[in-house]
Length: 335
Image 1 (cartoon, rainbow, N blue to C red):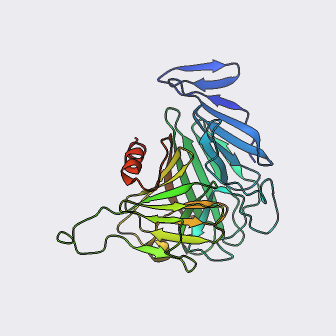
Image 2 (cartoon, one colour):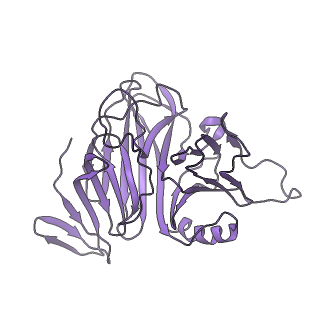
């Protein structure tokens, strides 16, 4: 593992100063900091990125995993498994929690290749790059590049899969955020069009075998699908869709986490054409995005990008879609 000294980097309009032996750049009141050897959840070698407003914590003892994302001194938007936190090593796959990177379609044992080993990383002052060793089961190497903006609460998360095998493989990159207990996902519906103006279907929605349409955790609105995590309901449920609006959100205690992702009208997506999926169980909720199914030649790579935005907002109730729209729009349209 590459060991880096503590670096504090402050981004600013054209100014560059040094504080002791630590480099710094300044931008307004925002400060981008990088810190090694942070202890979180029992893992002793985590890395923390912060711009003074939001922070991310990444495990390097296992992963790659982004184990925390939230406002500084605020709640973690991600779920951390009480049974798995702090664990390392072994041959079994562990939930751990946080944000992880899989390949789709889901099939055991390929998809559940353990990520229990240390992760190599580099920091260039702007981007933290996490590099997993080649998975023995799949000959796939995973990388995640995290770029936190210094002047706004926005993160670019680039996921990369490299085929280190001897033959072509077909897969789809799959970015999964296990979100905290008690929150809810918000997924946009396609805009309503009068049948006099348009007769064709506009989006597929996919149900898993263990999904019930009468599940009270779902709210099927005109503008949004809301999917609530309820710790009193232990059963699993999952839905997927081809999300042409290219975003999905997670709301928890007046904190709004929006992730944006791609949609290619000419691409084939896994799971009957899904680029967005929501999974719920009794402990957490997952907001998932997927890239297209891609044939990857040896030593070639496929990439998938999510843009994360975090905002503090008013209380979101399930029965007021106009309020939801007014609160979501400024976050989604933020540039």
